Image 1 (cartoon, rainbow, N blue to C red):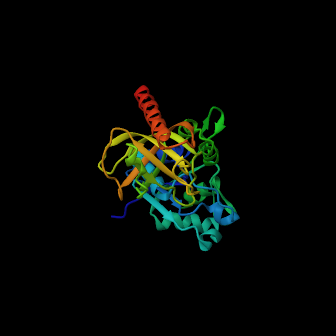
Image 2 (cartoon, rainbow, N blue to C red):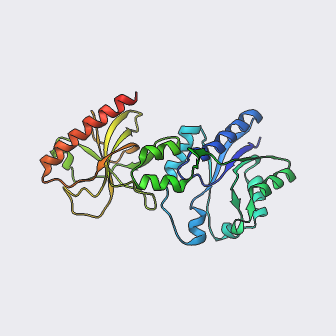
Image 3 (spheres, rainbow, N blue to C red):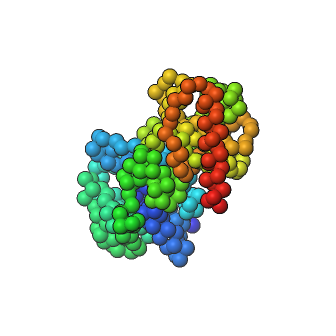
Length: 299
């Protein structure tokens, strides 16, 4: 028996609360009608391909899919290549391709959803095509917070400014970075503060340089508080390479080669250059005390 799907349509960069309204509706419809909820997206932001100007993504494709499963329980994520053929596809052909190729029984989109060549397909036109094919279609209105429409662009600006708490409110969850822990200079061990070194995938936004209160999720399911420095480590290294280096509170062990997820919660202070390593060590301990208090107060 072929599975039928209730599919939320969009790009879902960051998977914010506006996207969440679509996804929750897809899950509700799936539950009501015995369908499987799914999300359909692209491997590249369509506007980057169309305009030739790429804006940084909020998350990697891996993290996007992770958020969809953790926050909404959606495991079926359809990722289409946004290539020349897809970019030039007529809006009606695109809608029918989705309906037929992926056994869609219900489609859900936002009020400003566009699709097909030059974005000529609009939400109301998708509804008409769905009617022709005898399947359901819901169009979800804009989601506002404090009177402002939630958007990936807004959240991107907040993260770039270090306004991580506001960004998380618009996301509906913590901003996330997942990576395989890289082998670094092992300096942390020599100053009594072992750290994990991670990098931002090319094309993914780098938060404002500085120190953040983070939660650290390990492969074994354990969770720790962390002090994460985003930047170039000016005290110990003369480089332009940006990374995320995290001191994990109350943890000892070797995480090199392991997949670790960092969730950002609060900007603590800007990145600083210290006079020597002992000053850096003392500041890390002060940051750790602040982060420990911060998360205890959140409980």
